Image (cartoon, rainbow, N blue to C red; front, side, top):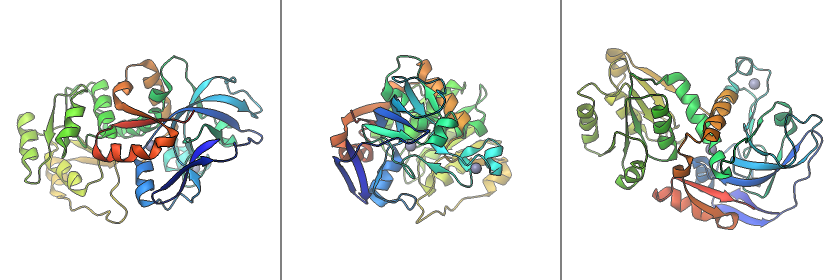
Length: 348
Ligand SMILES: [Zn+2]
Ligand SMILES: [Zn+2]
């Protein structure tokens, strides 16, 4: 098969490799769609300590079962379309026992420790098959939409602690695909008003295609903070979600949040500069709850794939570009410029 092999920084070669051969317990998927994640872009540009090349990246996929050596069917037949919960939890540690597989002490992950889906065929590890991590697609929703179940599950994991509801007003900082997903989930949860903020007015123009109250351009002089105050009658939003990797955005989130507000730091900061200067008096005087989130639990993935299958999630507007595998490297500048929200690769 022709697969995209990651060989290190800025080296992603689409080349002929042997087809994967499945062992006992494993399932083989023919990949119909795999979206490019921000972490694929980061790995391509900067490398990732957890990924030892050569490795096939790609973990936001939907595929068809074309072969199986599983001893049980797990409700699946050849030809079924499936999506996969991509974390392989140990099942034994305290976090696994509490249902927080994303925090597992021994976790491994597709496209990090096992080859991923920027290839026509992908093996599903036996542990994932026996743990029922393949979810059958029951509707005729496009495979490209179903690929978003993985990033949307991470968003849903964060929302599990934000408890957004009918009383809330929400600001999302960062109008990339993750920010747009946060805004859409906040709306589905019943938020009264949702605003998006970004330094790029071009990105915000695209975000306006979604169900928002409005957008605010982030400026160096801090005008955006005054604007958000004004839009919320001087109170500040009850929830602020930081969906970008900027220390200043984290500081701004504490600044703009209303009293009793909840603040989520969704993205990590670069490992080379992980420190932010935060005015913690905002936590004190405004009684803020600040949380972060990492990856997703299996229950988040279940909710995510169900929501996308329902057709009530605007997946069609989030996938803005589709490319064949041979042109995968074109996806990176499209993402960096903000021209694309999500790029979907079709390896077959
Ligand atoms: Zn991802
Ligand atoms: Zn564990």
